[in-house]
Image (cartoon, rainbow, N blue to C red; front, side, top):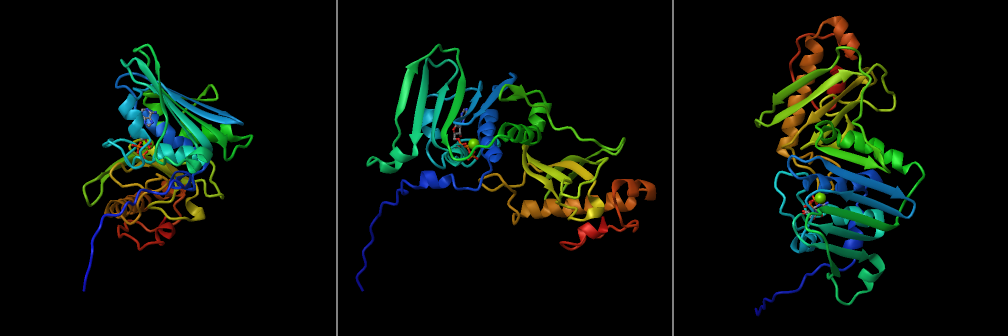
Length: 337
Ligand SMILES: Nc1ncnc2c1ncn2[C@@H]1O[C@H](COP(=O)(O)OP(=O)(O)OP(=O)(O)O)[C@@H](O)[C@H]1O
Ligand SMILES: [Mg+2]
C-alpha cells in the first residue's frame, strides 16, 4: 500500500477572531479581562490608575501601567501568545476575546515607559473578514515623550449597551477586584467615579477568617460571616478568588444550596486551582478543585457542628448534630448545614 505524508497549512480561518467574542461573556466579565491586563501591567510600588469609560457608542479602558513596546503590542494581538507566569492572565486570549465580545471594532494604543513611541493597532471586523492578507494588522508608531507609560483599549460599534451598564460594571468591579482595591495597589474609576470595595452588612462578631490547606497541600484562605438579612434569591455563599481576582460569585462551594443557610456570606481564595480560559469558572474536574471542595466541606461542617447551639442558629445552621466530621457525599452538604 502506497502512502504519502505532507505538511498541510492549518492557519485558522479569519472568522476565528470574531467568533472568539461569542464566548458568552457578560459585559462586566469582558471588561474584567481588560482590567486583569491592566493589573498585570502595574508597576511595583506605584498606585495603578484604571479609568473605564462607558458611553453608548464606545467603551474605553485606560491604565497607567507599564505599557507595551513594539514587540509587546505585536504579541498582544497573537492569539494564544502569553509570557505571563503566576499572574491573572495566562492564556493569551483575554484581550481579543473581550474586545470582540464587546464590539465589532477596537484599537489598542500603548506607550512603554522610557520608549519614545506610542503604538496603535486597530481591528475592524468587516475589514478583517474581507481582507486577503489575513492574520495581519496595521501598526502605527507615533513619537511620544519617553516618560509616558499607558495602555488605552477602545472598543467601538458595540454589540450591546444598556442604560444601567455603568452601575452594573461598578458593582461587578467592586466585588471582583475588591482585594486589589482594598490593598491600595489599584484605583479603578468607572465613568469618573472611584470604585470602593464591596461592603457586607454582617451580624456583629460573626466574621471569621480561615486559612487551611487541602489534601494536596494547597492553601485555602478567606472568611465567612453571617448577613443580617438572608436572601431568597440565592445571593449568599462565597465569592471565590484566584490570585486576588474574583472567578465566581455567590458560589455555594462547600455548603450546597439550602434556604437555611441563606445568610452565609464570605470569600474564598483558591490561588492554585486552575480556571477555564474565559475565567468564568474553576476547572471543576481538576484534582485541585476536587481537593478544595473536600477541604471546604469539612471546614464548614466542623464550623457548624461544633459551634454552640445559639451561635449555630445565628449562623443559619439548621442541623443540631454536633461533632459530626464525616465528609458528606455531593449534594448532601446543604442539608448538614
Ligand atoms: N493593559 C495592558 N498593559 C500592558 N500589556 C498588556 C495590556 N493588555 C494586554 N497586554 C499584553 O497583551 C498580552 C495579551 O493579552 P491577553 O489578555 O490576550 O492575554 P493574557 O493576559 O496574556 O492571558 P489571558 O488570556 O489569560 O488574559 C498580555 O500577555 C500582555 O503582555
Ligand atoms: Mg489577559
